[in-house]
Length: 401
Image (cartoon, rainbow, N blue to C red; front, side, top):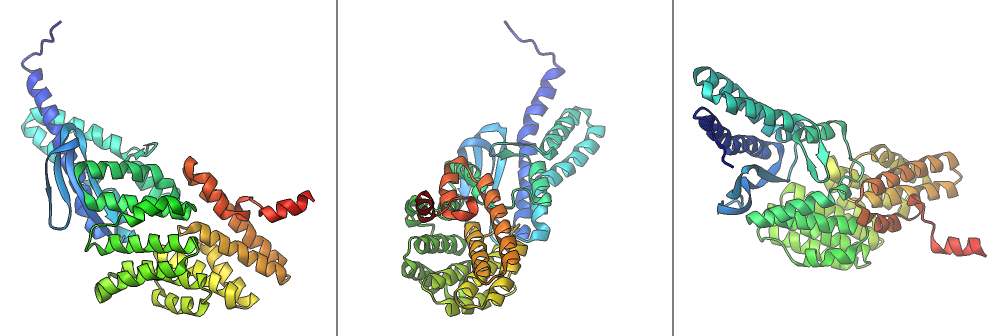
């Protein structure tokens, strides 16, 4: 059976096929151009999928490539470094804006060259598909990402809900030969292991190291390693990691990286029962927002529980409770701190305040467990303990007797 194509169809089919990589390039270029102003670092940019036919790594570590399956779109991968909230949506919408601009250009060009109408209509179809909010597993449209960022979807425990997405991006980055992107994804996966209480699973990733002279990656490496040591009861080993990082970079360590390890360092001093040292470190991140600011509230509450009065504990706990709907570097730790504050206030006879804090802790705990991947939930529930409804073993034994 043969397929006969008329002479009129062949040029249209050729333009349609040629428009696929062009549209993909324009769309991904829109994201790439908006990445740096929004506080993201570009790690790879290319057209096509599969192992690259050709690729080039720039001096900044960005891999630019041409994939084997040229007619399957493209990809732009960027990691958050210093995200500017007001510009974040520009990065997320960069591809859609670039396609909209291309639609205007193709629409005007089609008036002079009608043969370009097929490319114009195809671009509009792809634009509508990308703009429509949809999500299937780890795959989601730009429209869904924009809507989710606008309404705060998945803010509670968002890190734990990204396990599958990170694995997919890590495989992709390794395939195109991007060491920076692959290392970042691996470290984020190790971070999830630590947060969910699976510290042993994070050892191989943490000890594997990261590309040298990459302060953003090395600070994340030091943070995750320090947290792992803290949860394993070896805070001095964690402090050694932090000090090695500070010694290696000195004043050249970026502010965001320094703030990240400062929070880890403060928690390590709490583990060493030195709340004053922890509070001194918190002074260095006073006024800092984002995840660092969130966790600073949790650390302050932990310090107040160790050396503060009931009034100080209640004040610190209420401040943390007001932030509890947001994201944290270590959300389970914030929940546990709030739960402990409730117990402290209950001992002091402040029953209403204690119940309020416990109710907030239970609600946040349920949200964390709900967004975690199935493989992480049991470990996370064990780490959360009572806020997640798991009573200590001693209480269970006493009840049976």
